[in-house]
Length: 267
Length: 66
Image 1 (cartoon, rainbow over the protein chains, first blue to last red):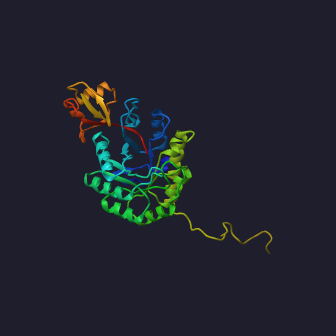
Image 2: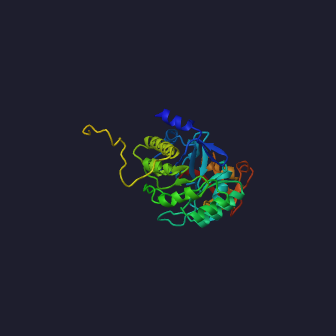
Image 3: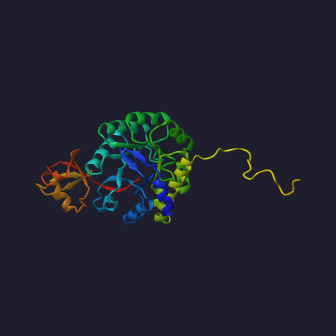
């Protein structure tokens, strides 16, 4: 199995984001794990190079250990701006994360809707414009809308991260057709973020031509998160290979795979 | 004297520095980030920054997130 992954990685198929060549097209989130201790094993099994985390107020009554202490040294940190309801709040969180030594990558996440946690594309665009000016590598989480994606591209986003389904829902590619249009029309890498609940759905996104996927809940809430991380690693690699290979044409009627002549009963 | 930490009023000793406050509260210092009155306070400034009455501090750390 490792041979398969290595052979995929050996093909010159890296993903360039923010001046970095990523060999892994699986980005992993660190929320919802039963303990911090499992996170390093999950990350190793996933092969992910880019990892997300959130910035929160210290809870004095119940101080939690910093998640950064559990991430491998060479991880590319992708702090999110979760909790932000406006562009200004997202910008503030991004600056704080940078001041904390997190580097200059940021996942913009601006949400007002608490039931579905759907992103506000307008505020997301405003935050993207500002943070690009400040030199951040900006990856905006967004509702898959072509007009908004074009504006984010023009604003200098490093990639576009449309949702497949609401955060944490494990419902897969509910927005498939809209994501397909983004992949077709937007030249930036499209990273499907949120909603992917099964390895097969990650493979499907990659087969469609998504540049990468970001997975958190599906791994964190699996019966065995380490196994699931490995399953996603394989699924992403398989889907990518399938995309590169170029799937054959779909047909309504059958087309025989075996020759239709030379039967035993003929002649 | 009274200050506000993460939105909650708190009594601290006079002449307390940001570094002392964090030390007393036993926060894992690594990669904590501090905002004093809305301005980011770099880690190298924690020792030299004395907190004044009425100051507002935000003290944040990284937690798991997607």
